[in-house]
Length: 55
Length: 267
Image (cartoon, rainbow over all chains, first blue to last red):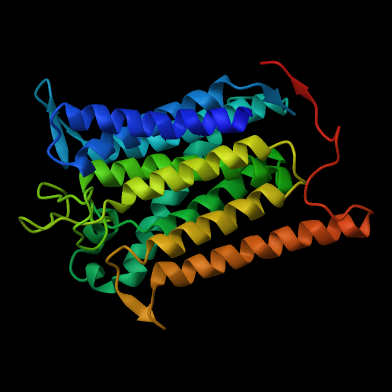
């Protein structure tokens, strides 16, 4: 369940930021997706650094 | 997409910013994993520095091997001059430097490979943001897809009016998900398996994305990167087979650890 939630966060952050930047008037969808790409890696780092520790 | 942006009058190279961030991101999860394993977290900085220096030397050396004409004229300028880095050369150079570091620290073994796997995948994913924002030529072939785009101001600009596949975005998403999967599995698989999975996944990803990119076909209709990807994936498969066989010899054929094979504690 955690994995599904995390995947939803990752892909959702990409889609949401892409959609917002496109709606704000990005030159094209590819440019908007670049913002989504950056949001995706930020979300990924947040997941990496916030989860429980494992040995 | 631009090669540089002006911030308070200072020209900042977009590729350099995200290239550096890729090492910062890799170092962050290395540090976290080292802490989980009870090792000094400052080793992460040492690993990243070794990988950075070795990777740059390897990537540049491989570029010069593939483009010997760049050595004509001023040799020093060719060796230390600006652009011309190739990922697989960086992988080899970085790996050799990290192996040397591990030998120095007495950490040479399967644990080192598994430690590196998620960090390598994450570094690649963030590194592709650098390619995307700078338009360094790693984009794909011309396309009319709704998300196809031009890079008229990139380091390797597309012709006016031409739109191409933004393949660095695809690669960030795929390798980011690979990094996530490896991170989730980090304490659940046998030593060595994580690195084997990484090699298979990275090889498959690069092999497939090359069909969308504009690199020249060099043998059997495949690009040089695709040939290298096949070797990478086969090496990963060989490692995974070796891990399974090693476990079979000692009673368990699974690549996964048995329940209780790891401990968890809240972070």
